[in-house]
Length: 421
Image (cartoon, rainbow, N blue to C red; front, side, top):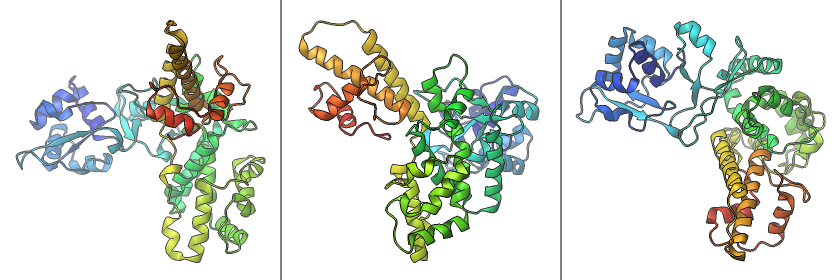
């Protein structure tokens, strides 16, 4: 399969012999059982020259064909412990590029078998326009993948339209891939604000959420899919040379400190995203990835050497990985259930104070995981808990929490529960 991971190909190869990849490959390479130590299906296996030759001979597929189909075929060549012979290295986690299950109907048609294949996923390869599917990827949480890896886009034609536009941008605009990263960071920062006027995103979330599923969980899981059309629209605007020239004309040679100083860009932003109210909402923005991009544009005009920083995305502006969001949401829900369902022990005022703080903290974390902020109205309730009043009390009286609360929790409360902490 084009773009497939080495591990996925070897796993499918072993499956044809009704074997596990952890049995076939170590035996074939004569590397011993330690090759797949810590095995997970979201990992990758890297091979040296001799190992690749053995697999090519065993599978009867020429190496040049495997090299064209498998992006990591010749990457990160490991060394044999003895200095010669076949060698492999299994890696997983953040050191492995994002990958996920490829479109199932496409895989079945290509291979003639139902066994799925894992492919490297890039923003423009997450959609299968033929079968109208979005590949979520596997979001590992304590070693367990999400319940599903693909969602049906039927009823959301704007997704396929955005995909066609995305491919066109990648073909004709050299900076499109880097601009997409900046645009994604900008749109995710909007997603966290949960504007009440927004109608399209909640509709898409409802369309993509299976019946009976936890809506809070799925709202986090499908974030990148739901915001994809707006991200592509913003990418188109950021890579438009005419839009950049209008921006420079608005700045008049000065460094803008808010988006209100570039009204042409803000107005065009509202137009391409289909949100007439957006211009007024973002005009006062004085921080964030979009303003930083605007400032980089102004600096690059004054000093061409600064053009290299145009697509720089600071760590503070990078979207929080969905896997971390899901972990936080699950932990918050678990803590909330324990706080509400646990047996109340009469151990005095100190214990009740500790328990009350733990309960409030669990609800605050769950609220932040769903809404992306802690700006809850003072009289609001969340899952039956008076969260607005609880937050107000802790902001008004910033006393130290009970001693049994972890330092991380104390920092989280005093910091207002900002995303990314």
